[in-house]
Length: 152
Image (tube, rainbow, N blue to C red; front, side):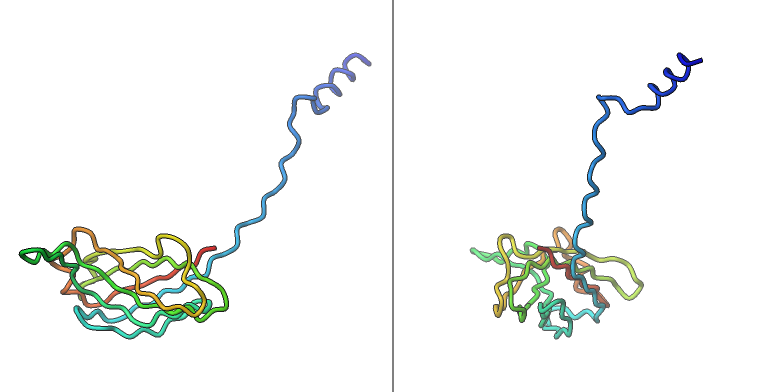
């Protein structure tokens, strides 16, 4: 009987090979995020009223990106977002924009932000978001949805 009890205790006891329990990692800090839907206008400055933790989106402009040498070549469509950092520290924004027609069909999607570094406190910059390979239908958009996400 004692041999049976000893065998059961040995089976239940943790072995030397069992690793120590892992510490629970803290959840990552939630990123600031905002989104806005606006009427679409091609080749016209669209004022915006969106601010995320001191990053103010001033305007957005949709047009074609051209290359001129001897003849103008349309490379792609783009959205140019003008932003001002009114915060006391630098911000690293990421942008995404989707354009839809009046029948709610998706015409194009673009995303972008700073390649390196941050937008310094008090600075204003314009970011180009490229709509790769969607040129023809994008000017016929009815509305767009823009989102901005800040990261550390």
